Image (cartoon, rainbow, N blue to C red; front, side, top):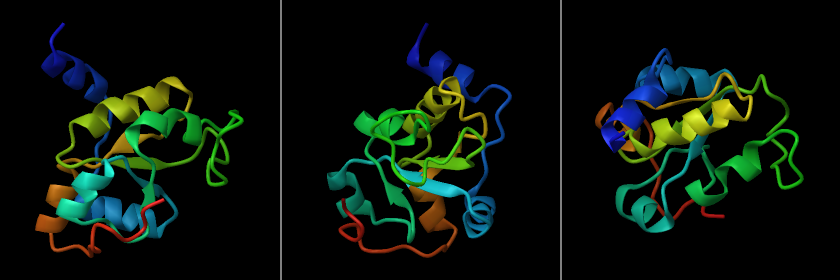
Length: 130
């Protein structure tokens, strides 16, 4: 299997919201989770209100049954929209979250690049680092 096939498989049958839909979903309570590394966020900017959870700890922080979860990881019904730069790594990350039982996990189609291009609010990339 190639990486392209793996990404395609991770997206199969999954609705991936575009920027405007993700913006509305976040306003209605969905968690926007930015998995980009700090250096990438510093270069590109960030999404206001997004949780910063870098990819290497994502599953530990969002598993509602895990001992290392964040307070927002309240249950398997949680709506999560994963954000990366262009929407590839986030597709793989969202698939991993669905394997943990977070069946509403998806990712932002086009990533942060599409969000910014749509003219949605952004912040300086150093804001919100944790």
